[in-house]
Length: 122
Image (cartoon, rainbow, N blue to C red; front, side, top):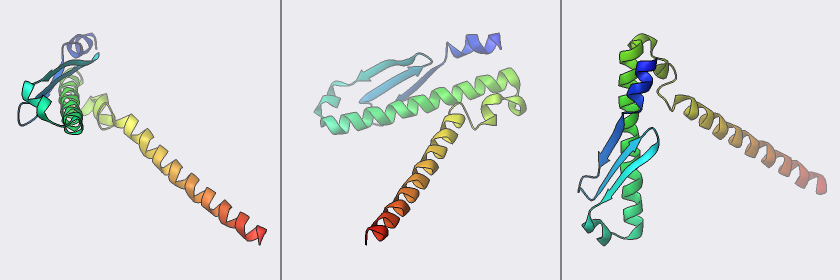
């Protein structure tokens, strides 16, 4: 486990858009580097923002892949706790899915209560 912890702090996810205008480095502490080619300034603010978000997400996925590989080496693929939940974001994704289901159920209940209220006022 100590070896894995030492390895994690050295991992850096990297990504670059296909035009080479945006490059991102993402590590355990968060965004480590953002490079914008001078030609990137010719893009609209919306296009540039979208590219940054896309490249940032790719760098994050690269870091997650590296983290999973490091955990596989430390624990073995069969015993890797990160794979139990589908990766480091697995539990978060499960919570988000539960939140979406809750919101949907809440909206259904509120809609039904609104229909009942309207019928009673008639």
